[in-house]
Image (cartoon, rainbow, N blue to C red; front, side, top):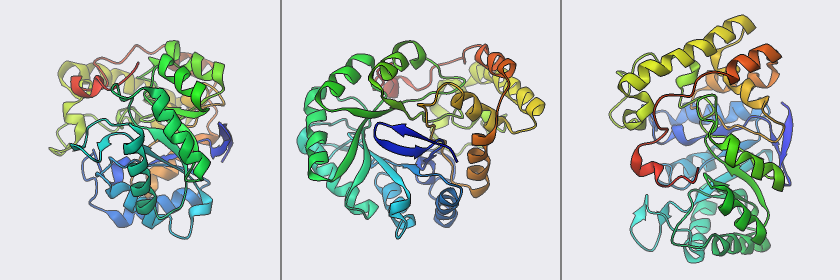
Length: 325
């Protein structure tokens, strides 16, 4: 497995997002043993960047990751996120990145993860009620205390990134980026490169869509968040199948899987990018990590880059309001 730098953190070129082990997708949380095996297999394959958040579950995912990494903590760069649980107020799914809330959040995450430090601590979503300078200052204090090694932002826009970075260096920004979500290329990516900030794309496989295995939404459970995602709805879904088909065509030409093509394309966009494809299955983590060895031709990369934009927004209106894009 190749490695890159996110700030001062050296990480595997492909990480592992653990959200789906506990939250969000059909059958999440139903097979903890398989999730643990997946985490252990990822480590065997050289994955070092493991990503979670207190809101996943809520809390259950950090607890799962903590159990799985017991005795293996020194093998990973452990990332988690704060700011979507208002601990002294309305609770989960409420933005709060005030310094007091961060101090509460970090203690809970440390306990659930079974560690005394977090390698990469992301603000999960920008809190419009707390100046980013206060948030960055609070995380900087945690770094001074040794509870956190590096500061990150998630789905932050250019102005927020610059203001936060002026208070304390931002090691990485986590945002959705894939063949069908490319909006950050114009506004955010140039800022990251100007400031030498790494990018950790989540949903690099389009919530599974770019694997080519989703041809219908009928198998999604009621609680699967893709039910409310505009890209998985009606005519948008049918139009987007054409994108998946084009990715599959390149995969057949390259003799790899569609998921590996989507990840290889993303890796080809720069050596400052470490995607975190999520999975809860051993065979999927094996497939995803093998993308590190896939080399697409210039013609294949150009063909993929010229695919039409996906139909539909990436999130329902309520969730979209939390994004700075």
